[in-house]
Every structure is written in structure tokens, then in C-alpha cells.
Image 1 (cartoon, protein in one colour):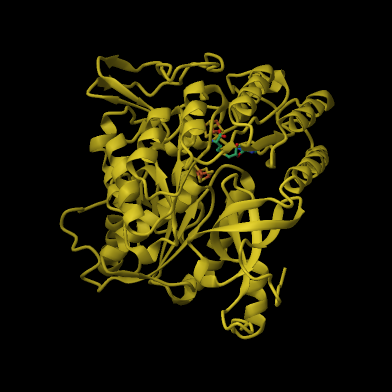
Image 2 (image 1 turned 45 degrees about the horizontal axis):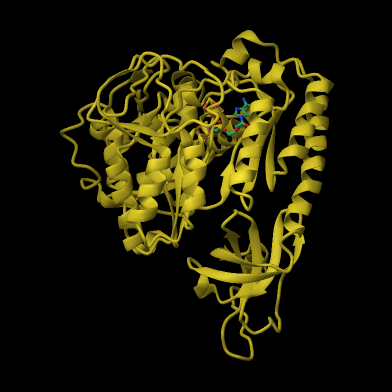
Length: 545
Ligand code: SAH
Ligand code: SF4
Ligand code: F3S
């Protein structure tokens, strides 16, 4: 089998047109970054005449945009590849592609193990996807389906293209810039990438290898993208970056980057917005746009934007300048996702997180004093290498201190290529990981219930996202009918989020989806608020909540 690192005959291919486009099925796994990547890929392929279908069996091209962060995430894709292999025996012309972090992490190995794969495309090469698809088609036609070569566009673990200025000319930048601003494609809410990649190298994490070196997008591009989205009807934007608060763009500076690991230099307590310089990065002159500057610019220059959110924050980079901007600008959400990963200093060091638990606690205290109404969310990993009962209890204590509105708890999964996998034993057995996972969830569940209960009786602003899952299932059982009330408006259970990212269920007209409403909270559960539209008639029925 030949594996090409570069797609062949790029310029000579008439994209999509020779075949009149085609039907594509695209399934997305993993984080919000992947969701955005899939949206960008769809825009790109639609513009070339492809159509997207919901049933993979009807598709000419089946694409999986994959995640590699834990083994469990990969297993789902292995099982999809098993199904598609059987289908391909009947339909040998179907093209199967693996995109995203799994393709990048396991590229060649994956193609060898799974001959049903026709193309691989890493997250740093998605702009090449149309060429890859066309090349597979062309090769298949020439060889009458006895395909010998897998089309692959991967960065390779050693290639860490980086820098800030480079982003302006970066090919991937064009993918973000060419996104669709069609109002029908956004239901009021959109993601905007501000930083690609990650330089932190937490010892357990594959992301720096799959997504490559950190690149900061030019602020002018970001602000313009936000403005155009708002013109297209978007009212809520979520800025994306693996360490979103580490954003900094050097204007007019000469930047070079050797792609080396950034040193961990301690938590940025009280920092006035000057980012620490990455090792290997040479900056000559120029002005810097910090994350705080960027938030302020978007807030002030895109006044039609009702809600500005951002994920995920890295604790060490959280300066007071960011808190001050959030406090000053009312349309920036008072919601901070701030993963701690562990409450034990020994484990934080083994994880290479670059902060101590005391520093993390100080950060939370600072947030509470500047933004008393902010809600926090966290991530922790249980059962990391050598974790003792004492370490585990320290993490439980941290949850009690942080009082997150919710916290994602992950069992440690050793990932190939990471320092932890290479140098540290995965020595906490599965039963202990599971028990600690459940204990952390129990601690968090009680805290989440208290946080949610404190909103009972209050009126909250809600961005309406969708019909609730429960109502959707009920409607499906009724054959898709919407229930009509006496006063003639269709009412169903809707689901949305507060400024602080709390989930809210309430009865209302599905036409409200994509807009902002006020809801009075009547009762709560550990992860949900239930209420009724403020100033609306009390919901007479038929609530499915
Ligand atoms: N950049 C973000 C997180 C990206 S991955 C941050 O640093 O916070 C999302 C979450 O997956 C992480 O916060 C971590 O809790 C979890 N995670 C990452 N690698 C993992 C692994 N090998 N095993 C278990 N959980 C992991
Ligand atoms: Fe992974 Fe750490 Fe980067 Fe987050 S900050 S993506 S956990 S390496
Ligand atoms: Fe997964 Fe890649 Fe996101 S590994 S979490 S899809 S950056």
C-alpha cells in the first residue's frame, strides 16, 4: 500500500464537478473544536457541489471526524469502521475517510489495520480534504476500484508549524475565513476559533501532537468573523481555543518559532496581560493584542452580539486583566470553564500542569472577589499514574472548595505518544478508577444541586437552543405533531442556557429557538433548572417536563 503525504495532482482536479458533487455523510466525535471543523468542512464541500445526507448507507463518501483524547473516544470510531467495511463489500465505490485527531495520531498504522479507509486527513490539513476526495475518486476510476493508495494529508508528530504572524498566511486560516455566513446554517449561536493547537504538553494529553503548535489568529479576522456572523442572525458566539485565555497576537513583529515546549513558569497571578514568551520564540518589536484586549474589542465593536463566551481556560494564564474586562463588559458571560485536573500537587507536577493547588485556589478566590456572580465548571482526571487515596481525597476537597456548577470527571486513559504513557506507569486498576470516578461524581452532584437550587425563584436570561430531548421523543411518538394549546400557539418543552451556562427547561413556542428570553426558575435538579417564561401566561399544559 502506498501512503502519500501529499495529495497527488492537486491543481489538475476539477473539484466535485466532474462527478456532479456527491452525497456525503459526516459524523463528528470529540470537542467543540471538532464540531467547528466539521462545520467548516461542510461549507467548503457544499460550495463545491456536494450534498450532505443523514443516513450513511445513502452516502457516496462516509467521513468520520474523530477524537483521540481517550481510548473510549477511539473505540466508537473503530466500531463505525467495522460497520462500513461490511457495507463496502456490497458497495465498493463508497469512499471512507477518517479526519481529525485519530487520523493524525495513528495515521499510517490505522490505514494498515483498516483497508476500508481511503483517505486520512489530520486536523491541521482539512483545507486539503476536497483534493483528497477527488484524488481517491480519480484513482478508483483509473484502477476500477482496485485501489492501491490511501490519500493522506497529515502534519506528522514532528511538524509543529507555529507563530502568530504566520497565521495570517496560513492555509488553514483560509478555511476559517471561507466559512458560510448563511443565516440558515446558524441557529443563533456559533463557534469562532481564536487559537489553534496547544503548546502546554500536559503529560497525559495527545492534543499538542494531534493539533500541533499553538497559532493565534489575527484579531482583525476574528472581529470581522464575529461581525459577519451577527449580521447573519447570530446572537451568541463562543470563542474556541485549547487554552483560550492564552491568546496573544503580536502585530507587525518578526516571529520565529522552533516548535519547542513552552516552559511552565508558575501561575500568572495579578499579571497585567503580558503573555510569557514561549521558548524558541523570538519577538522583535510590535504591539500585542492580549485575550483581554480581544474580548473588549469584540464586545465593543460587535454591539449586536448579545452573548460572548469562551472555552477552555488554562489556570496558569488567567490574569486580572481578563477578570477586569469581564466585570466591565455586560455581554461577556460570567462563566469560566477552568479545568484543574487534580487537587494533589504531586499529581499536578506529574501532569506537567505548571501550577500548584494553592495557586489554583487563589485564582478561584480572585474570580469570586471580582465576579461574585460567575459560575465555574471544571474537569478532573481520576486514577492518573501513582494516584493514592490521599491524592484522590485532595481532588474531592478541591471540588468542595471550587463549587463548580458542573465538573467533568474522566478516568485516566494512557495515550500512545504522550510522556505519561512513555514514562509513567498506568498503575491504578480499573475498579479503583471507577470507584474514584463515582465518588467524585457524588461529591460534585451534591454541589451542583446546591448551586442550581440557589437560582430557584430568580429570573434568568436564557438563550433558547432547541426542543428538549424529552419533548422531541414525545413528539416522535405522536408522529411529529406539535401540541396546540387553547390560545393557538404551539408549545413544547424548550431547552436553553443562562449566561452562567446553566441548562434551563421551560415550555414555549419553538419559534423562540435561537433567541434570548427571560425565564423564572420554579424548581431545580442537580444539572437543570425548570421554569416558565417570565411575563408569559402560566403554562396551562401540556408540559412534558
Ligand atoms: N485544553 C483543555 C482540555 C482538552 S481535553 C484543557 O487543558 O483544559 C479535555 C479534557 O479531557 C481535559 O481537561 C482532561 O480532563 C481530559 N483528558 C485529556 N487527556 C486525557 C487522558 N489521557 N485521560 C483522561 N482524560 C483526559
Ligand atoms: Fe491537553 Fe494540556 Fe493542552 Fe489542554 S492544555 S489541550 S490538557 S496539553
Ligand atoms: Fe479530541 Fe482532538 Fe478535541 S483529541 S478533544 S478532538 S482536540
